[in-house]
Length: 486
Image 1 (cartoon, rainbow, N blue to C red):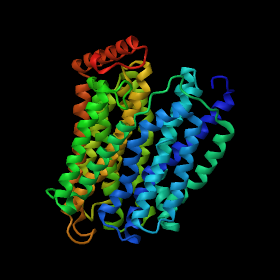
Image 2: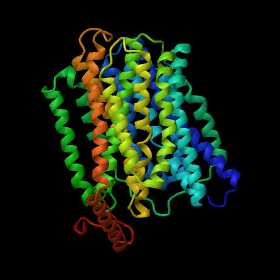
Image 3: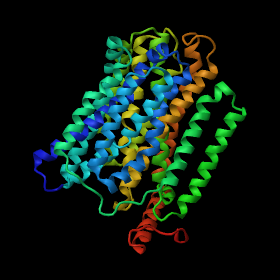
Image 4: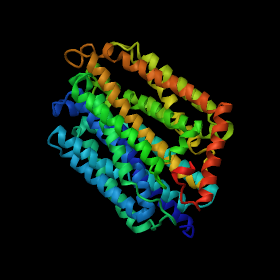
């Protein structure tokens, strides 16, 4: 790919950014439509949780698999398959006759989505070989994601107001088709010189673990936390985790290299991603219901209320990148944790009659925190890792973000269901108060994790882990290391 002209390279970047745009838009646009989906499809809170979590769960489960499949089968081919499935899933979501069908089609959409962002980033990395040019391309990539997040609430509100909730899925179809055609015409094929071996059993264990845990958290309030059904799903999740840990340690090329977690900065980045994205997923879920069901705002007005948060995220994301480049991850992550925590604390005082200005300030503070968190997470995950393992480490961090989103929606919805009695609009603000405290706790967790990761102990653990992995790969010719050597 390095032989492409400058114009062709930036055309490839634009095509890849189209996929990022529709996936980023989907992250916020669907949340605005949840109240309308609930009314038309007669869904309880748990049904709305599954509408979001079915997508996030499948995405989290398949991100690593999609990346390795692209390296083996061809990045353009995998990217095209992802675009086709995401577009088809969006079309089917728009005509779903009931909630069960909508959840199933969201899962199909997520299968396609798992093949888009990680594969597109791999295409960009292989297209822009000059470090300075690659940095600019990744900057454009980040800006497009921020733009899509900012446009999502307003676009979603306008579509729901104008044509109904099905419109939030229609918007993906023409963009997806255009990206599919342009990919076939202008994006060259590429493969990794030595792709990783597939790990189907490890992949299955991840799906069982995440699916069982999320089901237990979402359905716990309805069936009872001590019911045989919920306890069984929790037991299955625990068993899957135990088997996964033992199995992955013995594989030569595991789906998730558990040696990474010996590095405190890497483990901290993973848990920070779960905490921060859990806070964001829970925030969006609760806020869109509050604005429309309690305040009675039309979807477009509700979307406009979320615009300050999304705009703050879009502005702060590139600032965080610059801060990381100049000062490291400590300062931006401390500020991020403080912003998330402050936003959560402010929202604990929410009432049905809270002033609009108070809402805007609370959302803005939360948005600043969320905008500062993503760049340091990725940097911390790959920092100190051998270059050959940086992509795998970044992939685990991306998966952690989706896991966090899924758990955030599951936990916040369960907190709401457990404390809400009667119609959704009665007692909603009081019922969500524990959820806002949990979000504040997520911000506090980010602060604690960065202090640990950037401590002297954290730096020593990162250096030891990198040395261990590099030495093992050199001894095995890059093919991994058997369990006995770990």
